Length: 606
Image (tube, rainbow, N blue to C red; front, side):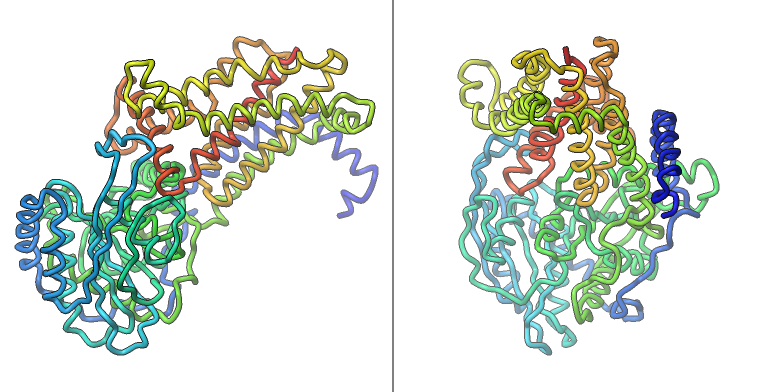
């Protein structure tokens, strides 16, 4: 405090920050990148531990023994699914009723804003089937959910069969303190969304569905099963949900604890855990696993049915069976016992999971990085914007612009408004203009939406940088400085708010946007810096993430294949926003892109 309260010392500090502003910014940027990459080094991480006392011990005896019966049920379910040409609703209802459950169905329909070419659907109609096992020793005010999506073809037949086998086994037990809901949903996330909206009496996505006839208590936790093979070599835990939400870390710890107890090979991001952390290969493996989680979280989509439960404050995760490591094998009985143990532990909860972390990164299932460890990496990048804001020339121009006789406010207002109107056009027009585009060009509806978005994005580059010509030329030097000050503060607030909600998205945007936005002025070589700004724009950031993700999952693609994946990511982002309420597309279109256009305007300031 003495350093800041003493005028002479404060003047010396200000002078030091002024003289060394650029070197300090460079050091902060490099330190932020190094800090983040160092998070994957095991000595800098924490060992996972169970925080919830009710789930602290795995000393329960799992007795599920119907694995072979589940595999035969999978074949029976597949035969009925082929016969029905989709989800065999009547067979599922009879199967659940024969196991002593209260069985109900829910029909739903949803017209997509444009066809989903990845799954070849436009008008979606389906039925959810769910059965409720009532708790025999409790007032039935709380519930757990086990869900298995009914997917096309041979996908996920084993998961539905194991769900039915677990229902039959659970029905004969007397220790349940919570209702257990067994849900088989059609059309993956759309069916899950319809069921959740019906269960909670909400309609936030325009879904049409029939009201639920049967309800249980308040849902405390949910598990989604994805098994598509009789031979399972490992179980992969999927945590990333809608808008980057994650379940309480204790749910992941519970899965890992039972995998260790039963000797089941478990992975996260499809990668096995390594113990040679002190070698270059061990660190690289942990860094790749952590980066995969960052990229998945940043995209804002739900990577499993569990992701939609998180919106309703229901801790949920997906357990996905993998058949890749051939020298390992886990039978259906062992998987059933693992799920039995997890459900029994969740059954013991006296309150919702809350004692462990909700914000974390996982370089492996046994180590985690808490929010207190990874936030400084973002802070080192964000402080660069504040250092540039404190640059004396910008502050002086801002104080002058506040005077009534100064045209600075009007100079800033015009490009800001036009930039945001361009963002509004990018957000609204692609979907609304698809019919017009299809009529005039030989493209499909999905291609029309994506190409319209790219066209508006590209056209925005030509609009704002001439806006200051509408004003008088007086005070143009002051004008761009005021605009840059405003844009820097705006970007700092945007990135800060984004990082609080979705750290991964905020960090990725900061890595690409901070360097160019902090250094941009109209006195730089226009052609060179225009190229650099385009290469570091939000659209190219998405393109880089596509290629990096493919490299991390060991499925590299060519430039043309990467471009097609990039177009698919754009269409899926728009669809996820319309269907499930993903916020990444509106954030980029309405805020990040207009903010970037303000800096583009500064580069071409005359």
